[in-house]
Image (cartoon, rainbow, N blue to C red; front, side):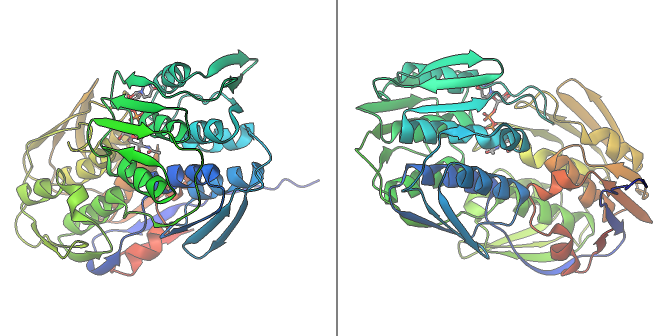
Length: 425
Ligand code: UD1
């Protein structure tokens, strides 16, 4: 019997082409996943517009399917009817496919009062504990039992509203508490809540469905439990990290791009960094950003990641790729995840000068990068390699691009449409 070799696809980039043109930004991955989870709570049809085509969104879609929800995707519109939901167990394989499937926990508990699922492991960014999620749910009357690698959660007396102070404003924990709290008995208060735009988007959708959530976007969120939710129609917010990615691609190729269907209000910590580096950035209407990087650029100095509204950790790898070719020294301080510099050694293969020590990375700008074989180590780290590859002399081949497909819809087609030479092979 012959052997069958499955060759994983790679992204192949011929660097040195200036990007020019217009890109319509996709819907936010980090919004669409909790929104899809939230549809489980609706006893009626929910319709989500602007859903990006991503492998992570496909995994969430499959989870809904396994739970017995009727889901239909037509282009960027996903309709979910959870009326006949029959199952409260997330299959192990799907849990492993997507770590953020943990956000289904609060929604399934809110709907069924019980949920069984396999414990998510660490991930590309280091250990990803879920203690804040579980401690909060326990306060809400949920009993958590660990039985041979599976977690069984039950709320025998129903989920109860509670006062919860998060030790850190975790995005996922805030979303899970909101999902469990909307149909809980009584009032739930979240103190030190995450303020990210995706938390606001989730609350907006749930309120359209009849939930009573106040304060999303601030540090205190108050939820008055309601008996049940109807369905609603909702448009997923634009992806702020994808916006930052294409801005970095424009800047590193000294090009100019108009980004449409974005939301500049959500990028208040990122846009000034591009200006500090010497790019001209103009914001129009509510949803357009024009960036021009024709003038001389320089290091922005120090970049410190924080929770929203601070500089987002997800944009750090992209700005790092850009600073590798800017005159001067740039210091990155990573405060959210432990292992968030895995892209640095890959950028070094392309000729970058980067020194990493624990949570600090120091980049000394070089004049040129040169193409090489590199591998995507995680989602945004992979996008950073694409950014760098666009500026390299010669050919860059990026392997393990399944990381990139988790969060970018047809990245090579988007970049080709504005002049890049990039293909999948
Ligand atoms: C979300 C985003 C991710 C982004 C991150 C921070 C999604 C699908 N992913 O991830 O892209 O980088 O927010 O903006 O929305 N922590 C604990 N215990 C917990 C939960 C979190 O110690 O129970 C720690 C984490 O290890 C991390 C920090 O808190 O160090 C922040 O994590 P969190 O905000 O929860 O990130 P995610 O929701 O996983």
